[in-house]
Image (cartoon, rainbow, N blue to C red; front, side, top):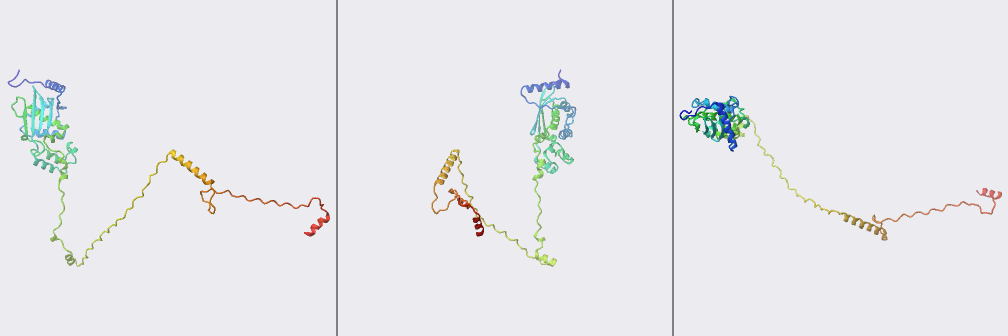
Amino acid sequence: MSYGNWKPYVPVAKRRAKAAKQVIHANKTGQSLSPVVIEGRTIARTFWGKAWCDNLEAYSDFENRLPRGRTYVRNGSVIDLKIEPGKVKAKVAGSDLYTIEIGIAAVPDAQWKALAKECTGSIASLVELLQGKLSKAVMERICQPKTGLFPAPKDIQLNCSCPDWATMCKHVAAVLYGVGARLDKQPDLLFTLRQVDASDLVTQAANLPVETTKAPPKSKVLDDDALADVFGIEMADAVSPPLPKKKTATRQTKPPVQTVKAPVTPAKRTANKTANKTTNKAKATAAPPPGKADTPDSPKPPAKRKAAKPAMAKKTSPPGVPDTPAKRKRKSESV
């Protein structure tokens, strides 16, 4: 039974089962769907997700349709949600499968530069920024209505294929809450959606000009004569430092040329040994020239042995002459 152009109400359990079947069918046909899955009743848990949802609920233009959108996103009706630069595309399973497209305007250049300048020096790193580890002042500045990073109602264009005449139907509201849930896991998508570079909030301090101290005007500087008159002292003439001596160029000598010896092969080594033996043998047999001292290379003749002296024979009496007493007496007298 239908009520005009409206289809009959579908219970949450049936709607959730129908959405799951549509996801399975899309995956089988090669379509890449990215459903929004909410665990429990809390839609967003991190800084970026909560800030997005709080920004939506701060405008009275959306307050009448947002409660139905929270119900749809919690029961898994948003079966596909993709965030692109300046655009959100989604599919929501209701009484039928509806297609939603939301346009988000880019942050104006002047607004973004002012935001980056005010955050200078307050954000240590890009990781710290994406994790939401910010000071209270930076958080309030980023979330400031109309001049912060989050869009105002005038920056949002809504479009849904459902027959609801309202600008923001429950399907669109479910998608907007789905964006907050998606920022819990991928906070960098917010900067993609608003078409700005998140690193500008971190590197802005490096681009600021360095302030230099100005030199005092010449009219306020006293010269040496004035100082001498005021303090009654004589100013010594400034002595210029001695000029550095020029280094004389030293003549560079060429390094000695190193000769590379040819490798000695086993055959060549054997031939050298044979030639050396033949030369030494010839020198040993050749007689040295007369009057020339022996050289270390020529062999020395063997030393001559001295002839041994003959032993002195003892004087003995000639045989046949007897040794008489008279003879012995004569020998003793002669001595």
